[in-house]
Length: 118
Image 1 (cartoon, helix red, strand yellow):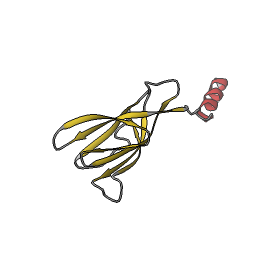
Image 2 (cartoon, helix red, strand yellow; image 1 turned 135 degrees about the vertical axis):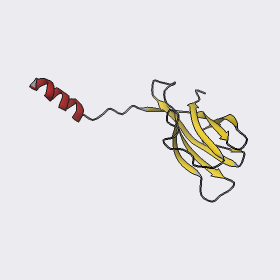
Image 3 (tube, helix red, strand yellow; image 1 turned 90 degrees about the horizontal axis):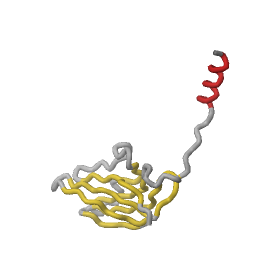
Image 4 (cartoon, helix red, strand yellow; image 1 turned 90 degrees about the vertical axis):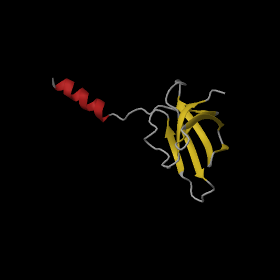
């Protein structure tokens, strides 16, 4: 019993091994216009900026877990509304948890869907 307890403590105390990420050449975002109720999927290349409605969206980078292309994508985004000096959003969006770090805007919702393979 003592050996089992010691093994459990050692497992809990051991640092978790971080999974490596692979940078994809781009990714796909989904945009919802809450006023019109329309959604659209938008393809980006890393570093590309697109105007969508009143938003200027820049995808700096899209990553996914190494060895698991269908794994959770996460994208580094900057979103500016109607030429405001301060971005409405700047940070990482995670495809599997869009509410974790979301765009807080009364008209638009944006979330990451996946990274592209080419």
